[in-house]
Image (cartoon, one colour):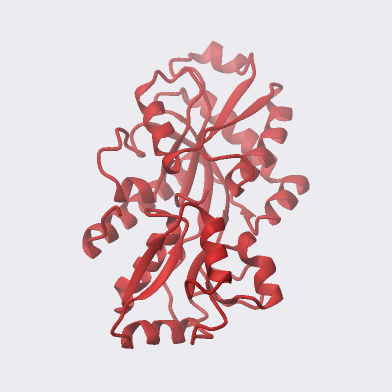
Length: 317
Protein backbone atom coordinates (compact mmCIF):
# COMPACT_ATOMS: atom_id res chain seq x y z
CA UNK A 1 0.00 0.00 0.00
CA UNK A 2 2.74 2.39 -0.74
CA UNK A 3 0.72 4.70 -3.01
CA UNK A 4 -2.06 5.86 -0.75
CA UNK A 5 -3.26 6.57 2.70
CA UNK A 6 -6.06 4.04 2.44
CA UNK A 7 -6.31 0.91 0.35
CA UNK A 8 -9.85 0.26 -0.80
CA UNK A 9 -9.76 -3.34 -1.99
CA UNK A 10 -13.18 -3.94 -3.41
CA UNK A 11 -15.29 -7.08 -3.56
CA UNK A 12 -17.20 -7.86 -6.71
CA UNK A 13 -20.81 -8.31 -5.58
CA UNK A 14 -24.23 -7.66 -7.08
CA UNK A 15 -25.23 -4.05 -6.50
CA UNK A 16 -28.90 -4.72 -7.11
CA UNK A 17 -29.10 -7.76 -4.88
CA UNK A 18 -32.37 -8.00 -3.00
CA UNK A 19 -33.08 -9.53 0.43
CA UNK A 20 -33.33 -13.08 -0.90
CA UNK A 21 -30.01 -12.81 -2.73
CA UNK A 22 -28.38 -11.15 0.26
CA UNK A 23 -29.58 -13.94 2.55
CA UNK A 24 -27.96 -16.62 0.41
CA UNK A 25 -24.89 -14.56 -0.44
CA UNK A 26 -22.28 -15.67 -1.31
CA UNK A 27 -23.11 -18.59 -3.59
CA UNK A 28 -19.79 -18.58 -5.48
CA UNK A 29 -16.16 -17.59 -4.87
CA UNK A 30 -15.48 -13.87 -4.34
CA UNK A 31 -12.54 -12.10 -5.97
CA UNK A 32 -10.77 -9.46 -3.91
CA UNK A 33 -8.68 -7.23 -6.17
CA UNK A 34 -5.63 -5.56 -4.64
CA UNK A 35 -4.29 -2.77 -6.89
CA UNK A 36 -0.62 -3.50 -6.15
CA UNK A 37 1.90 -6.17 -7.04
CA UNK A 38 2.11 -9.31 -4.90
CA UNK A 39 4.43 -9.36 -1.92
CA UNK A 40 3.76 -5.90 -0.50
CA UNK A 41 2.09 -4.93 2.74
CA UNK A 42 -1.23 -4.38 0.96
CA UNK A 43 -1.24 -7.98 -0.26
CA UNK A 44 -0.27 -9.21 3.19
CA UNK A 45 -3.17 -7.34 4.77
CA UNK A 46 -5.66 -8.59 2.20
CA UNK A 47 -4.51 -12.19 2.41
CA UNK A 48 -4.46 -12.14 6.20
CA UNK A 49 -8.19 -11.43 6.38
CA UNK A 50 -9.30 -13.20 3.20
CA UNK A 51 -8.58 -16.69 4.52
CA UNK A 52 -10.56 -16.17 7.72
CA UNK A 53 -13.39 -14.37 5.95
CA UNK A 54 -13.66 -17.32 3.58
CA UNK A 55 -14.24 -19.60 6.54
CA UNK A 56 -17.02 -17.37 7.87
CA UNK A 57 -18.72 -16.80 4.51
CA UNK A 58 -18.43 -20.39 3.28
CA UNK A 59 -16.92 -19.35 -0.04
CA UNK A 60 -13.33 -18.85 -1.12
CA UNK A 61 -12.03 -15.29 -1.43
CA UNK A 62 -9.50 -15.14 -4.25
CA UNK A 63 -6.85 -12.39 -4.19
CA UNK A 64 -6.21 -10.75 -7.57
CA UNK A 65 -3.20 -8.40 -7.59
CA UNK A 66 -3.43 -5.72 -10.28
CA UNK A 67 -0.57 -3.26 -9.98
CA UNK A 68 -0.02 -0.06 -11.95
CA UNK A 69 -0.07 3.73 -11.48
CA UNK A 70 -0.53 3.54 -7.75
CA UNK A 71 -3.79 1.69 -8.16
CA UNK A 72 -5.50 4.53 -10.00
CA UNK A 73 -5.82 2.74 -13.35
CA UNK A 74 -7.56 -0.24 -11.79
CA UNK A 75 -9.71 2.07 -9.71
CA UNK A 76 -10.81 4.04 -12.75
CA UNK A 77 -11.83 0.81 -14.46
CA UNK A 78 -13.84 -0.14 -11.38
CA UNK A 79 -15.67 3.16 -11.34
CA UNK A 80 -16.69 2.78 -14.98
CA UNK A 81 -17.75 -0.87 -14.86
CA UNK A 82 -21.00 -2.43 -13.62
CA UNK A 83 -20.83 -3.34 -9.92
CA UNK A 84 -21.34 -7.02 -10.56
CA UNK A 85 -17.74 -7.88 -11.39
CA UNK A 86 -14.41 -7.90 -9.56
CA UNK A 87 -13.13 -4.45 -8.84
CA UNK A 88 -10.64 -2.38 -6.85
CA UNK A 89 -9.96 1.23 -5.97
CA UNK A 90 -7.63 3.49 -4.05
CA UNK A 91 -8.63 6.56 -2.07
CA UNK A 92 -6.87 9.21 -0.04
CA UNK A 93 -3.73 10.81 -1.41
CA UNK A 94 -3.98 10.11 -5.14
CA UNK A 95 -7.43 11.68 -5.58
CA UNK A 96 -6.04 14.76 -3.85
CA UNK A 97 -3.06 15.20 -6.18
CA UNK A 98 -4.04 13.84 -9.59
CA UNK A 99 -6.89 15.41 -11.50
CA UNK A 100 -9.55 13.80 -13.71
CA UNK A 101 -9.13 10.30 -12.31
CA UNK A 102 -12.55 9.26 -13.52
CA UNK A 103 -13.88 8.25 -10.12
CA UNK A 104 -14.93 9.77 -6.83
CA UNK A 105 -13.68 7.83 -3.79
CA UNK A 106 -16.64 9.03 -1.73
CA UNK A 107 -19.42 8.43 -4.24
CA UNK A 108 -18.37 5.43 -6.33
CA UNK A 109 -17.71 2.96 -3.49
CA UNK A 110 -19.54 1.60 -0.47
CA UNK A 111 -17.22 1.21 2.55
CA UNK A 112 -17.19 -2.19 4.27
CA UNK A 113 -14.60 -1.59 6.98
CA UNK A 114 -10.98 -0.99 7.88
CA UNK A 115 -8.50 -3.84 8.12
CA UNK A 116 -5.58 -2.26 9.96
CA UNK A 117 -3.30 0.74 10.27
CA UNK A 118 0.47 1.13 10.57
CA UNK A 119 2.61 4.27 10.94
CA UNK A 120 5.36 5.34 8.57
CA UNK A 121 8.84 6.36 9.65
CA UNK A 122 11.09 9.33 8.97
CA UNK A 123 14.67 8.08 8.81
CA UNK A 124 18.05 9.62 8.00
CA UNK A 125 21.43 8.37 6.83
CA UNK A 126 24.07 8.37 9.61
CA UNK A 127 25.95 11.13 7.79
CA UNK A 128 22.94 13.46 7.93
CA UNK A 129 23.31 15.99 10.78
CA UNK A 130 20.06 15.21 12.63
CA UNK A 131 19.35 12.77 15.44
CA UNK A 132 15.84 13.97 16.23
CA UNK A 133 12.82 15.29 14.39
CA UNK A 134 13.48 18.69 15.95
CA UNK A 135 17.02 18.63 14.51
CA UNK A 136 15.64 17.85 11.05
CA UNK A 137 13.07 20.63 11.19
CA UNK A 138 15.65 23.13 12.47
CA UNK A 139 18.00 22.21 9.62
CA UNK A 140 15.18 22.49 7.11
CA UNK A 141 14.23 25.95 8.32
CA UNK A 142 17.78 27.29 8.44
CA UNK A 143 19.12 25.90 5.17
CA UNK A 144 19.32 28.01 2.03
CA UNK A 145 19.16 24.89 -0.14
CA UNK A 146 16.08 22.65 0.21
CA UNK A 147 16.80 19.31 1.84
CA UNK A 148 16.24 16.42 -0.60
CA UNK A 149 14.06 13.64 0.79
CA UNK A 150 12.97 10.40 -0.83
CA UNK A 151 9.60 8.69 -1.08
CA UNK A 152 8.20 5.70 -3.02
CA UNK A 153 6.63 8.12 -5.50
CA UNK A 154 4.66 11.26 -6.19
CA UNK A 155 1.28 11.38 -4.51
CA UNK A 156 2.10 8.68 -1.98
CA UNK A 157 1.22 9.05 1.67
CA UNK A 158 4.96 9.20 2.33
CA UNK A 159 5.37 12.15 -0.04
CA UNK A 160 2.45 14.15 1.30
CA UNK A 161 3.33 13.51 4.95
CA UNK A 162 6.66 15.30 4.56
CA UNK A 163 4.98 18.08 2.56
CA UNK A 164 2.49 18.48 5.42
CA UNK A 165 5.37 18.77 7.89
CA UNK A 166 7.15 21.30 5.68
CA UNK A 167 4.00 23.36 5.17
CA UNK A 168 3.31 23.57 8.90
CA UNK A 169 6.88 24.20 10.08
CA UNK A 170 8.39 26.27 7.27
CA UNK A 171 10.99 23.67 6.35
CA UNK A 172 12.55 23.87 2.91
CA UNK A 173 12.52 20.44 1.28
CA UNK A 174 12.91 18.94 -2.19
CA UNK A 175 11.03 15.79 -3.10
CA UNK A 176 12.91 12.94 -4.80
CA UNK A 177 10.34 10.52 -6.21
CA UNK A 178 11.37 6.89 -6.67
CA UNK A 179 9.61 4.07 -8.46
CA UNK A 180 8.86 2.16 -5.30
CA UNK A 181 10.05 1.79 -1.73
CA UNK A 182 13.02 -0.48 -2.51
CA UNK A 183 15.00 1.94 -4.70
CA UNK A 184 14.35 4.79 -2.26
CA UNK A 185 15.62 2.78 0.70
CA UNK A 186 18.67 1.63 -1.26
CA UNK A 187 19.61 5.22 -2.02
CA UNK A 188 19.26 6.16 1.65
CA UNK A 189 21.47 3.24 2.65
CA UNK A 190 24.00 4.31 0.03
CA UNK A 191 24.00 7.90 1.25
CA UNK A 192 22.68 9.26 -2.05
CA UNK A 193 19.83 10.93 -0.14
CA UNK A 194 19.93 11.96 3.48
CA UNK A 195 16.25 11.70 4.44
CA UNK A 196 13.54 9.14 3.67
CA UNK A 197 10.01 8.49 4.80
CA UNK A 198 9.47 4.74 4.74
CA UNK A 199 7.16 1.93 5.72
CA UNK A 200 8.43 0.54 9.01
CA UNK A 201 8.81 -3.11 7.93
CA UNK A 202 11.09 -2.02 5.08
CA UNK A 203 13.38 -0.04 7.36
CA UNK A 204 13.13 -2.18 10.51
CA UNK A 205 16.26 -4.30 10.13
CA UNK A 206 18.35 -1.29 9.12
CA UNK A 207 17.18 0.69 12.15
CA UNK A 208 18.15 -2.22 14.40
CA UNK A 209 21.53 -2.55 12.68
CA UNK A 210 22.19 1.18 12.98
CA UNK A 211 22.77 1.67 9.25
CA UNK A 212 20.02 4.31 9.29
CA UNK A 213 18.52 6.32 12.15
CA UNK A 214 14.80 6.59 12.87
CA UNK A 215 13.63 10.05 13.94
CA UNK A 216 9.86 9.64 14.42
CA UNK A 217 6.84 7.55 13.46
CA UNK A 218 3.59 9.00 12.12
CA UNK A 219 1.08 7.21 14.37
CA UNK A 220 -0.41 8.09 17.73
CA UNK A 221 1.76 5.53 19.50
CA UNK A 222 5.14 3.91 19.00
CA UNK A 223 5.59 0.91 16.74
CA UNK A 224 6.18 -2.45 18.41
CA UNK A 225 8.82 -3.15 15.75
CA UNK A 226 10.93 -0.09 16.68
CA UNK A 227 9.80 0.88 20.19
CA UNK A 228 12.73 3.23 20.77
CA UNK A 229 11.62 5.60 18.01
CA UNK A 230 9.21 8.29 19.28
CA UNK A 231 5.99 9.45 17.71
CA UNK A 232 5.72 12.89 16.12
CA UNK A 233 3.80 14.06 19.19
CA UNK A 234 6.45 12.75 21.57
CA UNK A 235 9.07 14.52 19.46
CA UNK A 236 7.24 17.80 20.04
CA UNK A 237 5.07 17.99 16.92
CA UNK A 238 1.45 17.04 17.55
CA UNK A 239 -1.22 16.70 14.87
CA UNK A 240 0.54 14.21 12.58
CA UNK A 241 -1.56 11.08 13.00
CA UNK A 242 -1.20 9.95 9.38
CA UNK A 243 -0.79 6.17 9.40
CA UNK A 244 -1.07 3.92 6.39
CA UNK A 245 -4.53 2.32 6.41
CA UNK A 246 -5.94 -0.71 4.61
CA UNK A 247 -9.65 -1.21 4.13
CA UNK A 248 -12.34 -3.02 2.15
CA UNK A 249 -15.21 -1.63 0.10
CA UNK A 250 -17.79 -2.70 -2.48
CA UNK A 251 -19.09 -0.85 -5.54
CA UNK A 252 -21.60 1.89 -4.80
CA UNK A 253 -25.14 0.55 -4.72
CA UNK A 254 -24.30 -2.78 -3.11
CA UNK A 255 -27.19 -3.77 -0.86
CA UNK A 256 -26.83 -3.07 2.84
CA UNK A 257 -27.42 -6.70 3.91
CA UNK A 258 -24.40 -7.77 1.83
CA UNK A 259 -22.28 -4.91 3.22
CA UNK A 260 -23.25 -5.96 6.75
CA UNK A 261 -22.41 -9.60 6.07
CA UNK A 262 -18.97 -8.69 4.72
CA UNK A 263 -18.35 -6.27 7.59
CA UNK A 264 -19.22 -8.96 10.14
CA UNK A 265 -16.90 -11.46 8.44
CA UNK A 266 -14.09 -8.91 8.31
CA UNK A 267 -14.39 -7.95 11.97
CA UNK A 268 -14.57 -11.61 13.00
CA UNK A 269 -11.32 -12.21 11.12
CA UNK A 270 -9.66 -9.24 12.83
CA UNK A 271 -10.55 -10.68 16.23
CA UNK A 272 -8.52 -13.87 15.66
CA UNK A 273 -5.00 -14.33 16.99
CA UNK A 274 -3.82 -15.64 13.61
CA UNK A 275 -4.78 -12.47 11.76
CA UNK A 276 -3.42 -10.24 14.50
CA UNK A 277 -0.08 -12.03 14.35
CA UNK A 278 0.12 -11.78 10.58
CA UNK A 279 -0.62 -8.05 10.71
CA UNK A 280 1.94 -7.55 13.48
CA UNK A 281 4.65 -8.64 11.05
CA UNK A 282 3.81 -5.50 9.08
CA UNK A 283 3.89 -3.40 12.25
CA UNK A 284 0.11 -3.02 11.92
CA UNK A 285 -2.76 -3.23 14.36
CA UNK A 286 -6.32 -4.37 13.53
CA UNK A 287 -8.82 -1.53 13.14
CA UNK A 288 -12.35 -3.01 13.21
CA UNK A 289 -14.98 -0.44 12.23
CA UNK A 290 -18.53 -0.12 11.05
CA UNK A 291 -19.09 0.88 7.42
CA UNK A 292 -20.11 4.35 8.63
CA UNK A 293 -16.93 4.77 10.67
CA UNK A 294 -14.80 3.77 7.72
CA UNK A 295 -16.72 6.11 5.43
CA UNK A 296 -16.04 8.98 7.82
CA UNK A 297 -12.31 8.19 7.75
CA UNK A 298 -12.28 8.19 3.96
CA UNK A 299 -14.08 11.54 3.87
CA UNK A 300 -11.77 13.09 6.47
CA UNK A 301 -8.58 11.94 4.76
CA UNK A 302 -9.61 12.94 1.25
CA UNK A 303 -10.54 16.39 2.57
CA UNK A 304 -7.32 16.77 4.59
CA UNK A 305 -4.97 15.85 1.76
CA UNK A 306 -6.93 17.81 -0.85
CA UNK A 307 -6.71 20.91 1.35
CA UNK A 308 -2.95 20.44 1.74
CA UNK A 309 -2.37 19.99 -1.99
CA UNK A 310 -4.28 23.20 -2.72
CA UNK A 311 -2.74 25.25 0.09
CA UNK A 312 0.85 24.17 -0.56
CA UNK A 313 0.51 24.23 -4.33
CA UNK A 314 1.77 20.64 -4.72
CA UNK A 315 1.76 19.46 -8.34
CA UNK A 316 2.24 16.03 -9.95
CA UNK A 317 5.90 15.65 -10.93
